[in-house]
Length: 101
Image (cartoon, rainbow, N blue to C red; front, side, top):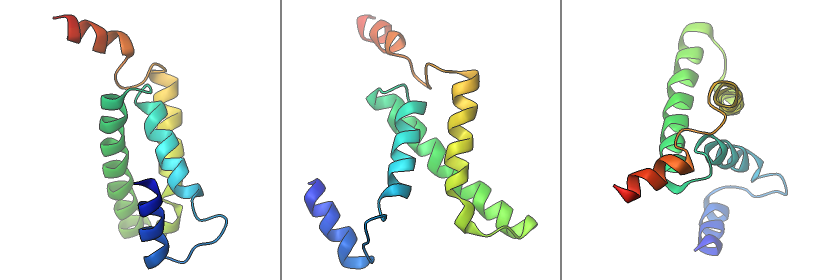
């Protein structure tokens, strides 16, 4: 499935050796913010994508900042989550308790 995704990406977008770094940044940020759990990564991925689009739109509309700075939002969100909730959005212990009940 990953091979087909790479093929589909390269079919529509130009590919160079550095083309996956931005995607890797978003995936890495979502996984860390989610606490390396499936549901936590899913929730943090949605939150990260929504925040990035909203903040990028507001910054370009009101401040005139271009959308090429949108990957910075993923790094800032990652730093904020690591400062205030280092275990992630959903902890492993919370999932274990929820499964027992």
